[in-house]
Image (cartoon, rainbow, N blue to C red; front, side, top):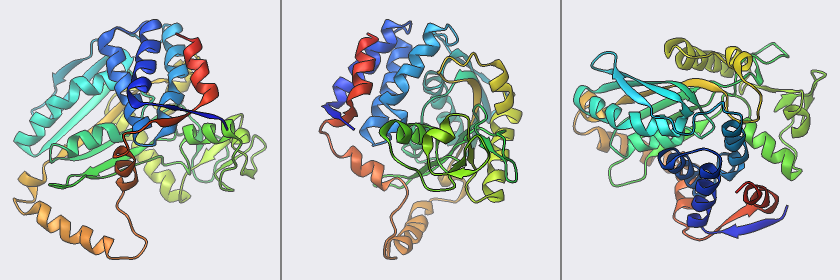
Length: 332
């Protein structure tokens, strides 16, 4: 695979200009380009520039509103709904998170439900933003079916990621963001593009047999849940939280509605925030740090999110797939 080094500010400019060229206004382009740049900065390449052609396809097909203006409504003192105006999810998140932070800091618990958006980004952006305000963050979302429930060979679930972030005073937060499938579909697609195999059993081919060929999984095959029925149960929970509770589309409904332009399908997102200060008490951080000290005392253990934060400390250029770079440039 050939790569080209690109500075972070150039990554932002490339994403921003591509989005502006194809129908985003400044507010929408800035939100999405920032999210894309942060993904590249932290090494989450499957959610960085790799997503730009899909974003553009959904703008070109008019599925996504590039000039969206999401709005917040308080359903209760603790529950906020953001109506996404059919734009990209990072825009709605940018609108809703300040209200969620304010509510949770006052009442200890806050819920943010996001409807009528198109999600194509990682979830750690929002949970980490909450942790940076000394709040615990949990977020999940569904997507079009690509994952078979335990015992099945046909998809029903999306990759249905879930993210959790725990704040640490004077330290980077503990953050994980994982698909409930064996692997995120974006990672499978990147592996197929770059000619890499994936672990055997990541998914099934179209004949229903386990395979390590990512192209067979991505093209007519199906992913499996991690941990068999355990991951399947968590994927089901995410469908119910991010679609049933939010009042937006389940994965199978998103497939029925989507125009298959290659961009993100419409759907919702569920975000919960908790204040350890108000719930656990003022010594919450010191108590949790004892636990983290015990974890780190074990050989081979690192805290979730450490690798991303280490990547973040590198201010130098990032290696971008050359073909992808040329493709994006051709779209501007």
